[in-house]
Image (cartoon, rainbow, N blue to C red; front, side, top):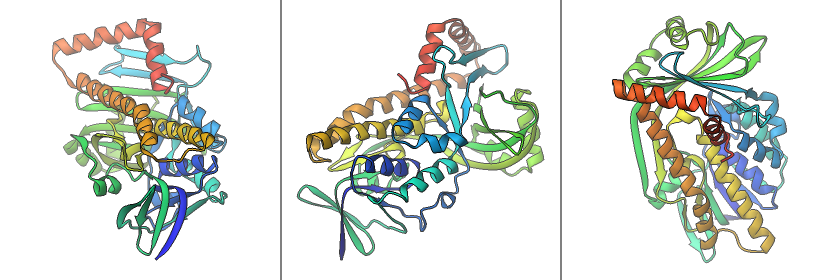
Length: 393
């Protein structure tokens, strides 16, 4: 059976896997991507969602020379309004003190397209599609993955194969999961008023509704809604025609961006969170969704995956400069130490904030009103929250 050598192999060619391959190849590593889909093309991924890119992630994308392609498709978030039930109870964020944006909204397809174009020009990245991993074994200081008709022999394997990671199942890495027994619907649409680069998050009893500003398309104002609600409600919403969905949404968004004119795409997904008990096994690192996923209430899941990658990138750079071998026990434990707590913290924050905004009784309503009022009046608290959302703390 044919055997292929590499420094780094990556299972999964989605957003995190593709950026990982490009970033680590820039450090002189030979990288192999093992992708189960039959063609390495963004259109095959069929992901109509958008990604919120934090300022911290943007800085890393600039460092690895990817942002200049993505920025043409990125709509800045200059302001954020958090609204609890009604317009009288809200927090207003901007970032004038740092003279930068709070984040950027980009369609996933544009990010993938930009990265794929750069990957295909790299001689030290090889892509294998239509791959089914059969086994993982070890040969001394090397890890070997067995595919349909070839072997990959490498120093370290990066599992970037999503929430239902096949690598995690093979290795039986323990994982904590939480099923919120809810769904989210993502709807991209045209609307009548300029969004002025403002994002909104409305908190309702059954879950938040976020409006994210997107780039204009053919002079049409465009945004994306991410609405969390019960399984029954989202299922019933899916069964309606677009005009009825538009009518429901227009009542919920309260004229914040004018009237919704036309739905472009809609997509639903179940709401679950998980956290691996550890982010590594022998010569294997879990990245992004294969390591953790969160309630989308803060829109920070992909950015934390990018923080994982930035940490790994700096670790690989350090080991390469010292002439040390990638993927040994010390390497993996250092990655774990740098990244596990950040994921645990984000899981706790998103889970608890979701719980707090669910309750309707008078005590929680009054407590939320007081807390929101306190934050709105405190520049220090607002700055701390915006720094966290930007990935700068």
